[in-house]
Length: 536
Image (cartoon, rainbow, N blue to C red; front, side, top):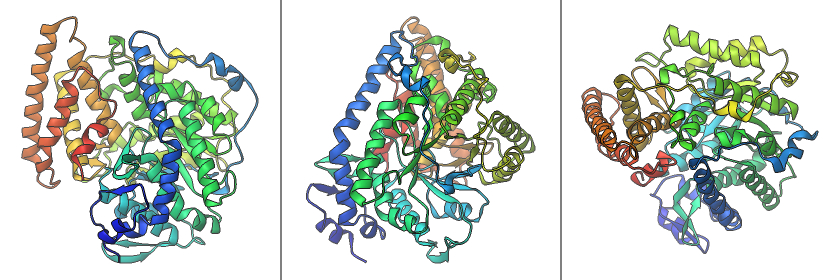
């Protein structure tokens, strides 16, 4: 196996490398793979950065009171008849999709499950340490090849002739960068890095077995960003000699702005897009983030949020209607019921709530659902097997739906109790510590957390502390002091109970990160961007 020094000495011109020495690095970061990523980066870097800058401009408009709405200039797209390209056979049945980071434990669970799809997630359930990223890509290459090493033991995965979940890869969002690889002296886009590595190493092998390179696209805000991704697909297919339309993607609708442009997003990606996913957790976070300066968007505590809330039901109805009108799948996101027992099993109460949420989703017309926690797989299978007669529910056009833009952000207001504040602080601190340790899924004593649920927790804290900063400075100081006291108490509590998770050494940095976000008058777009400098 080549050493890391030999890898560094064979880097193509203009490419820099700052990653640690890993056994998998030389194979995954081959010169040809890096050249391919460099071509994508050189072509799309400026356009990506320009689009990210426009997000800030949009936020400034919302801050001064210009509420988002559907675009009048794209009415012709919404009103015209058109459909997405035909969906590949491997993606026609998506009733249960198991999502998790591309580590060996999760992939073994996926392999042995009855899920239709395994979503290998580099975004919301993965902590992007260099080791996690490179080993994740190595694991995915082994999955495609048919074998994978678990704890040094080679284990055969099912051959392509045997049933196994169809693989769909979710790269990191457009806002993220991969600091360990530079192109022309600047960090490469994490989106292009994850997308490019997987496609380069696996597209042709997948094609040989009549599968394809399938992706989830996260964190886009509008159809201009969707168009960027479509152009990335076009260039990548040309560079690798793949037929037009080989790449297929499902876009996650997890932002209020993207929700207002679902038709447009499908349209600009219509030759490559096969569906939309309803990312509820991030959608709630998006409402709090985009309307953070408007007091009327102070949401109730998490225990009072459910899929029955008007703005979430409106999102679901509009997403299903939009997708099925265009011949695309509508996939439900992770349930917001996440109570578990200490051993990771579901509580009976939580199982009933999850079943109830999924039955509502299936009845409304979703073609499938995401599952984060293995014990939920059987519930999802039972519910959607009962609801779906055939492969999907594309025949449910939902012509009864009439959702106005205002319905998508008509939230139920609520105040925070001290118990709710302490819960949010505990979730945020423990999850950030877990993320810093390299684990993107956290099993707490009574819940399972991932990046969006942590984002929701810290957003509510920021709102509670900062909404009185200008008008009532004395109230702001009082709430800042209250936050500091509660945070100190939560750190002590977490340290006293941290007997198995090994997070003790990460709580100091976790509190530093959380304090910096909560006590700053400027809202941080993503906690992961703030915390990324703390990981290797």
